[in-house]
Image 1: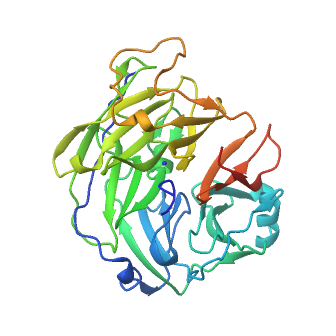
Image 2: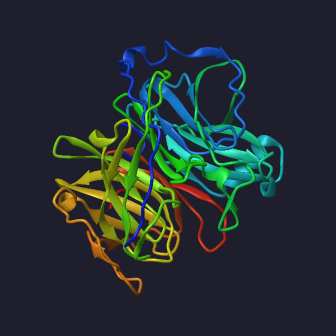
Length: 371
């Protein structure tokens, strides 16, 4: 299992659902070729089978699968503890911390090693870097030349000059990634009329793109919307049926049945929770504890929420405005012990690796027990 399986009124569109059959895990590296992937930016990360790292390239509008060669199983996943991670990455690269931006993290489920996507420099011309923190605490740069890789192009990305609320839309070509059962699910924006979309790409990568649109209702805004991207999501099973549970800005939580994501379909996602406005979801993982299922959702202004998901299957959709910053639907507990969490990734069944930054201080990487 990989990342986030281990991510009222809105109309959101999801496009380009690829439907080719997936190869078995034993064939997962056979389709990769040796060479230089020419990644233009290193953004969202996710792990697939056999130590394959998926890298979202927002500027290049592409998804890369890179063979890390990291396939030695750890007898026990070691806890991670790194203070001022940005400074350590900058020292490894021979530059200043001000010239380093850490974009995402992922944990190899086989080895427990932590991988980072990094920008050296600022803006669209920043140099992409992949770094690996081994279980022994050693930090090194992964080569991006003469590696085994595959590339899938993301069609109809936002134009590099397009802006939304003053921000470049191209930076949100890919906002989150998760691999499940032979497919890589991607959230992000397109240049289409209904710009918010989800993509499912069979792996090994193959040609043939199909499209489906998704409609949701956003209670805090009291209207349907089409331009707000999924910020973070997790694949999740309700009974034996696969769904995506997706969180959007201000903060609706929506379930989308994967079975309905077919070519030409118009799918209505169900808003099962409104978690409060003026907030941006940052990262999310799904887990089980004491026989119950939960989501752990980190937010920009509302801390970390623990959401019990047993009721996700039967939850009625929110179809009316939820005003005044109120909440509705699935409830949550706030985990006050977890402060400043901006990214997280499941390490094992009982622990997660989190990246924190409290009140503008340094970025710290640590392992915590799932609450």
